[in-house]
Image 1 (cartoon, rainbow, N blue to C red):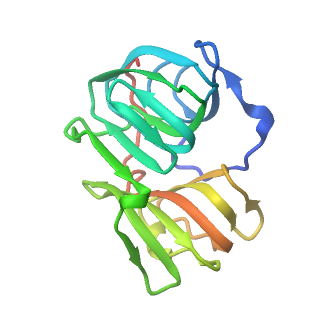
Image 2: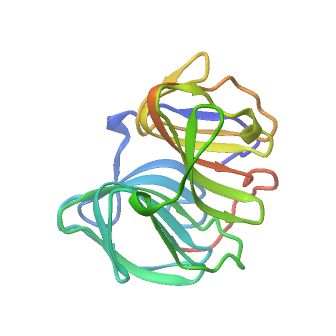
Length: 221
C-alpha cells in the first residue's frame, strides 16, 4: 500500500486465498484492510458460487478474464469492462465459473457513471509504435485502457510520468530483470523509467495518472 514504491508481483498459482463466501477465491495485489478500503485483486468464482449483496462506497470496476460474471445488472463475459459508481450495491455470482480482475473503492466521488465496455465492440486505435489501444475509461487525468502488441515492442515512455499500473493479460512483459507472464501485475510510481518490453503477441490492462496524489481510502465495503 506504499504507492511511492515500485511493486512487481509475478503470478504464482499457490497464492489464491479463500474469501468469506464459499467457492469464491481471492488473489490479493493491494489491500488496505481485511474486508474494507482500497483493494486490487484477482477473484475466482467456482461454478455456482455467489458473494452476498454488498456496497462499494467509492466504486468498483472489473475486467472479466475468463468465464461469465453476473450480478443484479446483467451477465458479463470474458473481455468485458464494468464500472459500478460510488454507493452502488449488488450481489455477485457466476453460474459456470469465472475469473475477474477487480479494483474496489478507488473512484473519485464525482466519477459516478455506470459503464460497460465490451472488447469486441470497442474502438481500437492503432498507434505509430507498433501497438493498438482500446480506451476503457478516462476521468480527471486518470486513463484506463488495453494495449495490444502484435509482435512485441517497447512500452510507450509517455505513460510513465504520472504513475503506471499494468496487469499482463496475454504474452510476456519484461522490465530488463524480470519477465512477467499472464496475470502478473506491476505498479510504478510517477517518474519511474524502466525499460518495459513486450515479447511477442502481448495484451495488457493499463492504468495511468492515478498515482500522482494517491492515498488509501478507509471505507467499509
